[in-house]
Length: 321
Image (cartoon, rainbow, N blue to C red):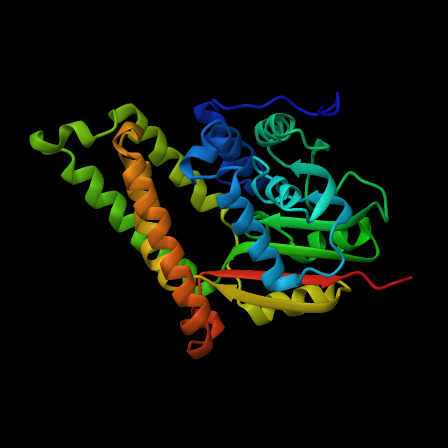
């Protein structure tokens, strides 16, 4: 259960609140993610079955290895709906979990997901720059696609190291690289423009979402430009973590061809009615992503600079006492 002092979700922000959010990245994060909480898993094809369990554990092991598993108590920073931590727990990486997010709506959904899976998880609404847990609390801190939302990433690293036990580990994944973000955004914007305009044709009207939904998505996309604060160069991210006091720091990148295909596919899926996305389509998209991810790992990662890949993952440890 969330703490009594935790604020309630606000999934329907007023126009004045949205205007204020443009000057306040933290408010923008709360409003944007509260708005998305109820449909976030569907939007990003998140599940809590073998597909995403394998993905989460493979990502974790690719950067951190499997030594030290299972961790006794893990906390997820910026947990969203719990995708990363809950699937890692199901994969045997951690036994007990704590979900935290700046968005009350996301914490609420993450706790509901954990309860449905029968996992030992508690949760708090939390600012990553002031984590509301005592020193030396966790054996592991994880996060997926969270660092790029935090105004002061170095301070967040310092807080992560503070709440970790001596020798504890952190793993952050799903962070956009500077180059990867550039081509992913352009692909997404072009796909949205193309899909929402082509479906204006009478013959394709059945593929068009109601204009009110498209307008709401456009407003959310405008806020997304505010909440996505950073992109990262892998070497600079390593330097930032070391500067906060971490040791054994290592960054790894993934997804080049998978990102070039994945961003148009995800944007198309967000632009059309969900009932049009058949099981056959979802299987096609998933298996295409698997094949391209394998190409990235087995071939392209060996010949291309790591800066070209879309996602960067980073791990490090807290110095033993």
